[in-house]
Amino acid sequence: MPQLDDVIPVPAEVRPDRAADFTINPGTRIRAGSGAEQVAEYLATVLQPLVPVSVTSSPGDGGIALELTDEISGDEAYDIDIATRGVVLRAAAPAGLFAAVQTLRQLLPISAGDPVTLPGGRIADRPRFPYRGVMLDVARHFFTVDEVKSYIDAIVAFKINYLHLHLTDDQGWRLEIPGWSRLTEVSGAAGTGVDGAGPGFYTRDHFAELVDYAASRFVTIVPEIDMPGHVNAAQVAYPSLTADGAPVPQRTDREVGYSSLVAGAESTYAFVEDVIREVAELTPGPFLHIGGDEAQATSAEDYRIFMTRVLPLVGKYGKRAIGWHEMASVDLPDTAVPQFWRVEEADEGTARAVSAGCQVIISPADRSYLDMKYDPSTSLGLDWAGFVEVDRAYNWDPADRLPGVPEQAILGVEAPLWSESLRSMADVQTMTFPRLPAIAEIGWSRRANRDWESFRRRLAAYAPRWTAAGVAFHPSPQIDWP
Image (cartoon, rainbow, N blue to C red; front, side, top):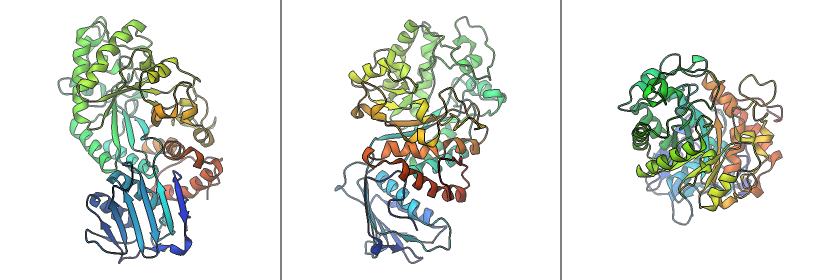
């Protein structure tokens, strides 16, 4: 039976009381307070394979109660009290109750037939950073709506609350844009993707379905339209977006830095505004990612001109712009969020953006990139940022990563997964797990509570849950798997 603190991410405060264990049986009722109904139904679905329970809105004692209260501060903060008489989950908002349920899930038995007994005691928990994300590249290799839904179900267990979808790149364009049908007809068709593998795209309805499903799991979708570089797929579909209007060949290789939108052409901004308006309309979340990385084919002056024109468009349609940290080479509005991704020990532009009031997302490739190989024998992934084993993904801290970027300027952390070498959801899972739980703990847990040896033990105990759920993971030799 798990201990009360055998969860990932490690909670802020845990007070075990083994004399207060609570056993869930078929007569147990989930009592949903006002506003807690959605999370209560989700919890009932989680418990169904182990023990059938019912949901009620009737007040009473015993069972499992989900309550919203103004006595807890922060939308994702929560308390759990487990006693022999019942279990109470309390939070200020449904997102906090959902986080509490993820903690509760890790305390449940894995298989039906085992006693469904929760260890007694109290947990009081809250996140360190508000943004804890993972990025999935669906441009280099496309993943279907159902595949992305399954990915969402796997990542929420660790309190990940943002899914950044890299929707466009040189090899493919994966989102339908009205008025620009060739983007998906040509650059989402067969033969697109790295090595021509993994064609496909999301219609407006498909994308709305993904957004809604993510929201039901308290995950916010962050769409990325990469520009002014990484645009070969757009230019293949519309040669009018090139400098000379001449067609360009489709590219399915892994090279970067060769394509660019034309900063001096008004047609560029007509196209960009159409895309931003559509993506903003489809995305209820606060952020829209505009890429901005590896724009080697764009001169520094053209890059400045382009960003000066495009950043206000993001705000015009009600979103905050996130961009890879190259974006910080220009003056940014304080609403913009640079996302640091390189391996260098400092970045002047990012520090300058922070001094101007910007927040930052920290995603160093040598620590958080899920597409880096674990070791030289790993068959999937790349190694340009080095090998990233589980300990390397865990043993660092965002507040120490960049000079001039203190903890109070950090919006959060994100673990990007680029898909050049991926061909299946099993590939995605293998590169994600077990490293994403390390990044999740960095983003959620208090720095003082984090400990590598404790994490290794808790991570090992999670493996049977992945196995039972059919989720692939890398059996790192650093972990003493059961």
